[in-house]
Image (cartoon, rainbow, N blue to C red):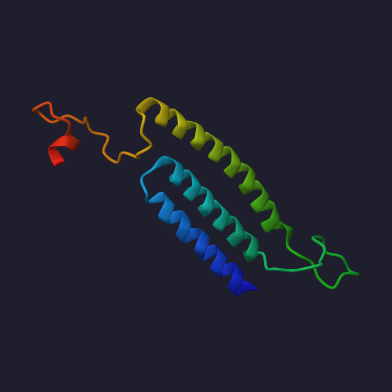
Length: 123
């Protein structure tokens, strides 16, 4: 079971990193969501996988499951939802203003001294 979860965490992380490196806003948003899911599953598995055990220490029960990872993951899900909504709105606004969803790495002015846009000089 741990191997399956570790493989899933690795696959989510790899997919998230790949999508972030695409330099487009909406794949970046999806990549960040994949990374947050990977972190959430990682936190959840760090609390050990215990089935059919109460989250409260009880003398009659044979053991208990740690409720702290569950509380952390629930809080992370709520925060991630809010941050994803904010990033989607900012991405949509940037797309509507620029007409392109490319993530520009250079924030310098786009014109050289000759007045030609930098992208056209490189071509």
